[in-house]
Length: 118
Image 1 (cartoon, rainbow, N blue to C red):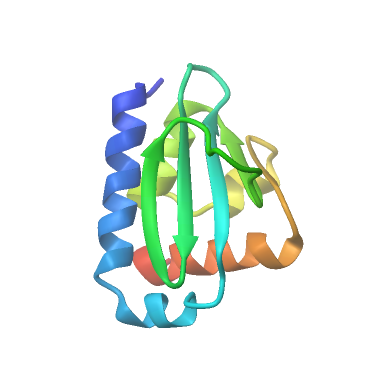
Image 2 (spheres, rainbow, N blue to C red; image 1 turned 30 degrees about the horizontal axis):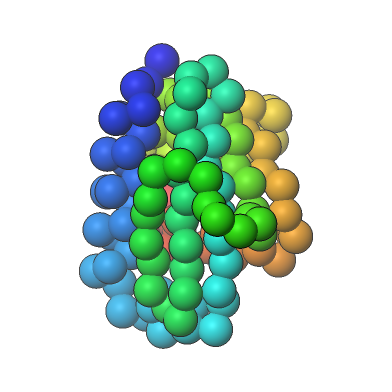
């Protein structure tokens, strides 16, 4: 089990990877989304906000409705946002649940791929 702080650190790593990739910023300049990252086994919730190609990460719930909700156990979330695992296996076996449009889910998967590779 990962802690809230470990999930925060993994999201910071994801943020830093995103910040280094100008192609991602350009690609996402018109994809404005609010994404909730929620652990299912501990009290931990974060919000990723993409606005005009810029990404921000905050602790807690957003002030408005989310476009995507990503839910999994804390260990999977930390591993996922550190880039230690891809989302495919946990998504296929049901330990990673993503609620949102199929296009948004694919875009988030592509962002992860662009940051961490395969």
